Length: 460
Image 1 (cartoon, rainbow, N blue to C red):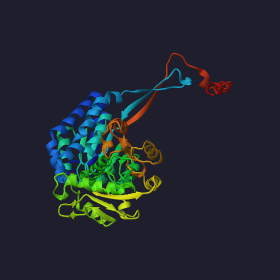
Image 2: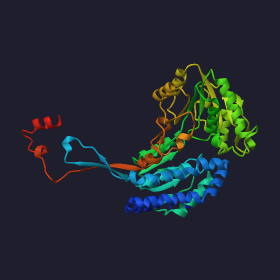
Image 3: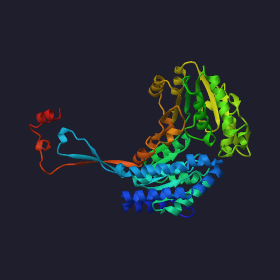
Image 4: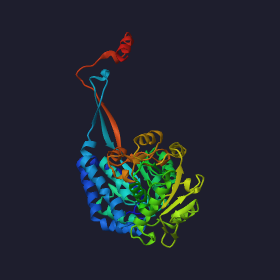
């Protein structure tokens, strides 16, 4: 593993630039080989990954496998499609360029920095790395210090399977991140909160470094009357309380048609007990809050509204029960910031116009959920709202589809990744125009006398 005491960040970047200049990473066969090595690294360390996630977040083994280790499916997708992605694409030319040919070549950017979060500390580090490798870059990884067991494990894995001149991982806290951001990179990919995202973008701007910011926000979940209630409540409860609500695309609050609110609430309460029992604190299937700081923040949010179910806390274990709230004011703190924890406010509406107006009055969310079989309503929500992505009649699952770009808009992020989108994120689309020597027309050359009329007719 690499720390700042053992080797300077500047030295790592210098060695990676030297390696990149050899052109080795541009070889598609090399990229495929490295992707296969990355998959092997994931599969060979499954149990260690599960244990590290358990230590950091008390993440259940099922959730660790389903939401973190299955990132190797993203690797498989890249391996399957990389030869197509890397082929130059023909571009159309107009009549006046008849003797020319035009193509677009995807070029690797160079040395890129990937800064990961703590909530899915393995998946959200490896997922972007897949795109960086597929696009032919050298990469420096910076995992979150708030998930120390996973960070340490990742450091060991990267050091074991990859040459640091190609892929290196640097551990450390805020100071390390600041030192990294002070350097010149060819691209920065950041996953985390909006406030830190602003810091990353400001630092990148000093070097004119392009960025992808995977942030978050308050992702609304609209519940219409035309639903399958049983399926709806299960999908909402799972999407909200997986990883104890510490998911950037978790449903942040429910907007429910008042005609179905009572039935929905009863269904949600019943499902929480089905999933986690009468005492979720003893459930083997329920995670914990990452740190005391985040625990205290969430406990303060519990003061808003009225508890329908849950509300119990245990600071010694950083445990907060799956909690439903009602009678929440839009001015309450819980409706002013992303919750990022196991608390779900429920707000009723009389007319869908109210729900749409509320969503549109706030920063654009990373995800928007609608539960409804009404096709007209589905189209209306798609047309009248803006969000990073939309999932109809389910939650969270859109993240797992490699063919769908994943990313935010506005305050919820810049840029996207997954599959081809990840490859494109870490690539430069280089335009190449080629002329022929077969013949040459003199109409564009000086002297111009008598040629303007022809030019106007030709280009008109």
